[in-house]
Amino acid sequence: MNKDEIISRIEKNPYYIKLIKNPTEDMAILAIKSNGMLLKYIKNPSEKIAWEALKNNVWCIEYIPNPTEQMCLFAVKKAWNTLKFIKKPSKPVIYEAIANKGWAIQYVQNPSVEIQKLAVEKDFDSIKYIENPNEEIQFVAVKKDWSAIKYIKEPTLKVERLCIMQNEETMKYLNNITIEKIQLFILDNVNIVKYLDKDDIINIEPILIEKIKNNNVEDKYVIDFIRCSSFEFDKVKFIYKYGSMKAKRILLDYKLSI
Image (cartoon, rainbow, N blue to C red; front, side, top):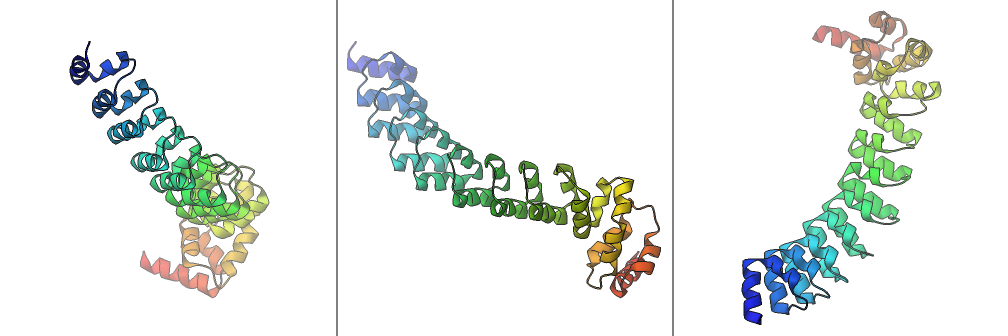
């Protein structure tokens, strides 16, 4: 079969390239322009062939033996997860992939703190792909979204408290919640009582008194306390008995507004 007949067959069916032992560059390019993934059937493709395949389908980078940095950059810009097929990616390639999607960090071996930070700044839940993130990385993630806490196996106390301040639902994702921690958490968000049993609520009462009697108590804290249905005692009487002047003013303003 002559060259023209082979080309004619490839034009009709690009997969015919699989049957050609030593296709010419023209034959290879004709096939991969139709389907870049056919590169897998071409041994030792030239740079020209590799580029034509990439332009058609960046996932074919898996079949390029030694892609250039420019090829790698082209691929990860189009699809961040092609990074998994790139052996020993350069820093620029890693940075480009992470700039596209923070989740790309899962394909980076021993990522530096700088790369970890870039990943969670891009996508907070990228932290699930980081083993033992330090407190700085934990902070970056939970500041973007408190729910990042669910992906952190061993959050620091400071990180736990930051999440509690943002949303009391954090309690659902914490392990080893001690009474000491509860006494701190109640200062950050009174709504955590939803997740406490009766004994714990009794134990935090003295802490609650100290918070309410503080003249710098936040408006939101007092209002949340008033609205919270988990307390069995009379909250209005509680504020009148223990609250600071500010807490009593907040209570009065709240009652007048409803």
